[in-house]
Image (cartoon, rainbow, N blue to C red; front, side, top):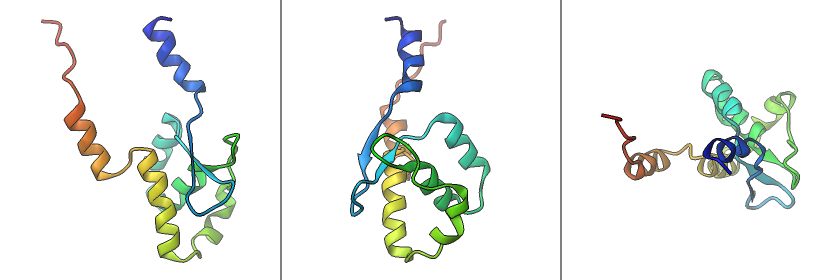
Length: 111
């Protein structure tokens, strides 16, 4: 398989981890499109991350944007813990950013 095919094949990959403390709920890796939408959507970003990342075992979303107002009423500590799981799995923490920077190799300059 060529590097191009390998990379394009990632579009179909489904990566899930169980959402701790909630039976039959999972956190999925967001697509580039979903992550970009979150970056543009500053308002309620943690709730919108949760809506896009939490799914069933098939990767189907458990929530929609219609659930945002109700989700915002959940206990902040409990919800924060679940959102942190979504952020960590999707590499959206400061520690993840620092690890990525440390582990990145410079691209060949072609000089």
